[in-house]
Image (cartoon, rainbow, N blue to C red; front, top):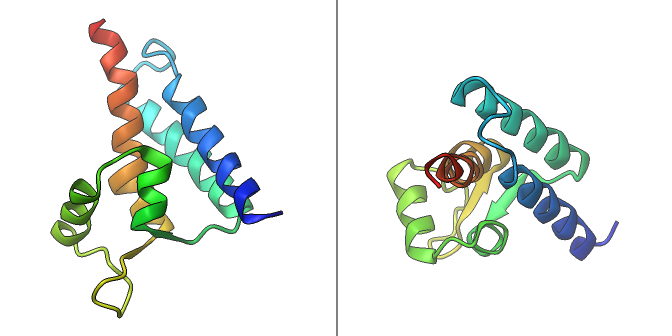
Length: 111
């Protein structure tokens, strides 16, 4: 599978997860567990183990400063290069994808 196709597949899953109704799960913890399971499954199937800052920005539409702050605050950078930022699949799920998806889902409860 081409790199572009992999990115489209991951982006599609992220977009679909953001559309989950807040009423689908009884608790936020159940929802989070569902999201983590789905993300792990697709990222493993796509053999995606590392995420660059650019990739995080493209998948989740976060700004670079937010990404940098989260990476530095939680000591997530796996790159030996000072200017390159690479994080693990688990860090992407825990610190970026799940919080952003949960924000999207819980914001629907307020509306």
